Amino acid sequence: MSTQKPATILITGATGNIGKELIRLLSAKGIPYKAMVRSIEHAKELEELPGITLVQGNFDDEGSLDTALSGIEKAFLLTNSSEQAETQQIRFVEAAKKAGVRHIVKLSQWAADASSPVRFLRYHAAVEAAIKASGMTYTFLRPNLFMQGLSGFKEVIQSEHKFFASAGEARISLIDIRDIAAVAAIALTTNGHENKVYNLTGPESLTHQQLAEIFSGVLAHPITFINVSEEDMKSALLGVGFPEWQADGLLEDYAHYRLNEAAEVTDAVQAVTGEKARTFSQFVTDYAALFK
Ligand SMILES: NC(=O)c1ccc[n+]([C@@H]2O[C@H](COP(=O)([O-])OP(=O)(O)OC[C@H]3O[C@@H](n4cnc5c(N)ncnc54)[C@H](OP(=O)(O)O)[C@@H]3O)[C@@H](O)[C@H]2O)c1
View 1 (tube, helix red, strand yellow):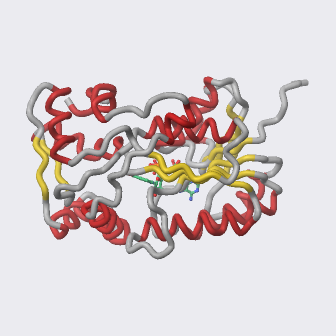
View 2 (cartoon, rainbow, N blue to C red):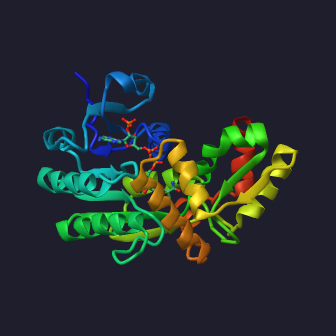
View 3 (tube, rainbow, N blue to C red):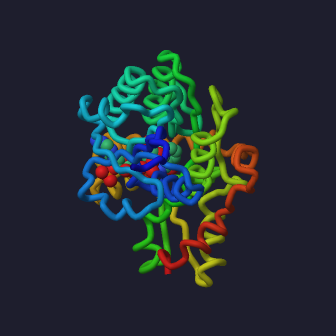
């Protein structure tokens, strides 16, 4: 019979960008945890990670959330961005409260605000409010734009040496998702993060022109940033399959960036992890194979 203490941490979004980094960190720290996945069959390769237990759960199925949350003390809440995200996350919060979860670490977004013109910032604020109202303790992680989001341009950067957005001269303190995962891992496994809001940024605030210059320097050939109109950005997003709700939300995000509302740099990553937040140059160096 195993004498190992059962895992009391549940990670959602474990197969996604941040979730994958987070579960690797927990495994490396030797911490037992459960990872909620829609299909255990499709996530089989994660079972090789030390300390992981896969549990089936779907944000659209309340019963599966009740089962996944049974015996859990701390949960990491992340869904992809979609028109359903607010309903899905609030369903999870209600199930967590019912299951006796003590603490939720929620992946939110920089400048989450119920009265924002940006739909993503409104839905994150609504979920934050539901968590606060539940009486569970919380840590809200509010990261700025993800550096890894630039990997959406990998083909066009490889083949045409350019990328585009409706960013103008906006300065953005974008962040590497590995730093977000590092903060989440600490908030889930140590005390002192109860009822805290962490505004997470990288160490510098950069225009898209400066991103292009860093790409050019690290990849050792010129990469050009092309500023496009909102109309052109929307048709490009729809063209690669984004649902209209999501495309419009991204345009709202970029309008908010152009007002320099996402330009501030914080030291929260270093304050929580003890490590400096990664620079954009470090990101491009580490992911160079994607862009070459
Ligand atoms: N992109 C940015 O610059 C930015 C900035 C700040 C905040 N954010 C926030 O970051 C979040 C996205 O993070 P991410 O990029 O790590 O996400 P992601 O890679 O899109 O991962 C989404 C995860 O959610 C899981 N999932 C989706 N639908 C589910 C369902 N019905 N039931 C259970 N699991 C489900 C997915 O599982 P499957 O593998 O089964 O699909 C996947 O593991 C969003 O909330 C967004 O608002 C983004």
